[in-house]
Image (cartoon, rainbow, N blue to C red; front, side, top):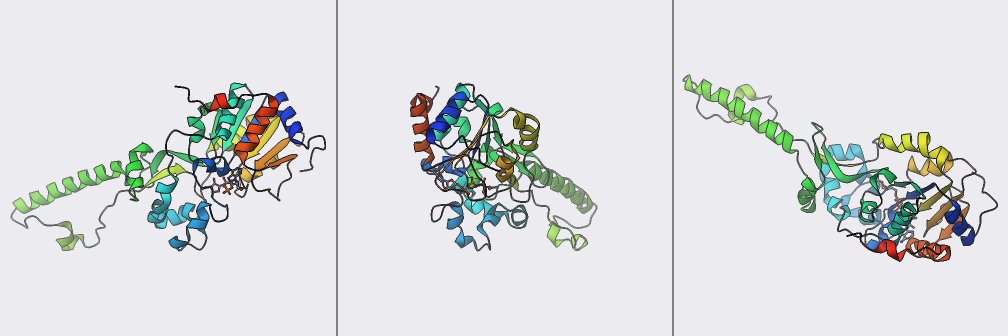
Length: 311
Ligand code: OAD
């Protein structure tokens, strides 16, 4: 994507912010690190640098759907560390909220699963959670859905949360089959047999409940339909500015977003680390909270106001 020559400096960025009406903000883990939540790929501090003990050939496998299906314990051994915490948010989340309040936010495409945009008051209809979230979880066996907080207790203990619908079904089926056996025993056969003692049940597999998988998008899973639909059929034509914040843009298909937007739409990149595989019109490298605060200062916008809780 060739650069647009008219945009270079931070003041060009400020002008674009002021003039734009339909801004796409694409965010990654870097916007939450100031809250103590690690990103993924930063050397020494990122989550992936801390997973050696799991013995995976690539730490990203912790979010790989086939690894999860084989051994969910691996994911749940670290899940407690990435659970959404209290109702806090960073100045960068406040900045996204400010764009919304100014009627300029078209969509915040977030790769983050921490749900913190909502804490800052960004409206659900303004957010696409490209990689899902912990807000809900689904049973891998029977697709039973629960809200995330129903399994947070188990996750916090480092346990693998099991499906209560499966548990109920298994208990009912076991009661039914025990009923049948009791009938048989009252016919003068065997009394109080356990399933495992029963030679006729040799091939019988003890039913186990399904595992509840938080509805975050693992490697090998499709992104929520809303991502492609909204981007291609709605936002692509409307967007007049793209701001990418705190993401290494290493994970497709989100990494492809800047490339599929029309060339005449200016793109700003705000992050600590530059990316080499995509050319942005303006790179504002540094701590994103500092950068957005400076942008607001120069635009004459009050970011502080957007850091105060609504209630
Ligand atoms: P990464 O860890 O790959 O990138 C975070 C980026 O933010 C890096 O460029 C950091 O330098 C930068 N950064 C960190 N803290 C910052 C700060 N305070 N100010 C400015 N920049 C900062 O995280 P993502 O790009 O979000 O997917 O990762 C994308 C996906 O990879 C995640 O959604 C996750 C992961 O595997 C799944 O789990 C499916």
